[in-house]
Amino acid sequence: MITVEMLSTGDEVLSGQIVDTNAAWLADFCFQQGIPLSRRNTVGDNLDDLVAILRERSTQADVLIVNGGLGPTSDDLSALAAATAKGESLILHEEWLASMERFFTERGRIMAPSNRKQAEIPASAELIDNPVGTACGFAVRLNRCLMFFTPGVPSEFKVMVEKEILPRIRQRYPVGEPPICLRLTTFGRSESDLAQSLQHLALPPGVTMGYRSSMPIIELKLTGPAEHRDAMLALWPEVQKVAGESLIFEGTEGLPAQIARVLKEKQLSLTLSEQFTSGLLALQLSRASAPLLASEVVPAQDETLAQTARWAEERRVNHFAGLALAVSGLESEHINVALSTPDNTYALQLKFSNTRHGLVVRQEVCAMMALNMLRRWLNGRPIASEHGWINVVDSLVL
Image (cartoon, rainbow, N blue to C red; front, side):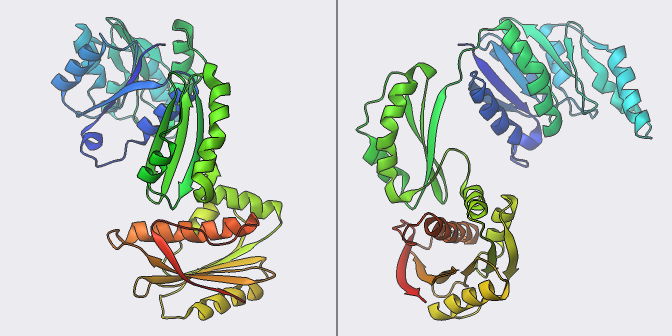
């Protein structure tokens, strides 16, 4: 298998001022294409550091995808670093310069002189088209490594990787079948608890059991080469069994998307009333195109479990909705969640089992609890289950 690596550049990435979404996207994209990344590095806007890392990786990687540093400003150094690492000069690519000038003219703008820098590439480089921006990409070979230089703008980067870079990789290197990745997501169990329960699994060579913790969920992933597909599928029911009641979805669909899909299948609409979650439920469900009739965020107020249940019931009736979900405010570490359905209204009073988490995490945990309550009802399951971070201290059915 070829060795594919990524190099992210820029002080803003290195210092954490921006989140490197390009790196996450590329890692997932390459995995799906059967060329998973073996390493990622990040270097700031320093010419010596850039040249050093290019020369270092050129003896280790078959392919290096360099992201960022192709803009028109003085801190955009990737082209100069590539030329310096190869011991050659930059040249002005006249065709790309003309393309840039047309880009600005078609938009009724004048191209600044500084933009000419974006048409300068190493003398031996192969130009790589950028159909949606002004910074061309380019490819150079240094030692054993084929290096692709790409702009940092996500929309430009993704198009270039998909349309220009991937075909070139496939032309030059043998690419096998994508690895198999079976995954499920749990809510309410700890990573250590799940790992302890799965340590007995006898995994085939090259197959790994992975865990990804992102509060408040834990993702379990069984990953391995395509030739072990049957063996992995045979093991998967055991993973599902261990997840048990904490399993909330499989694959990458996501809980809001799953709920949106089931609501549409059952032709049910939903209205929301939120206090502690401050609109988080509405945001997640609307992004998944769930059939929401109405949603409201109201100031936190003291209320009993029965009051929360009746409020949810009133919201459902007043908005002519199939279902209503209500979340109360947080009072003395207690919070109420109510689900009103055509037949009954269910309400749970919850208490956080620890207080070390901040507001954002608590809101996300509470939103997940409410969505899971809705999911379980939609699937014909009891609305409450055990959760490691939340205790159900009272319940009510109207």
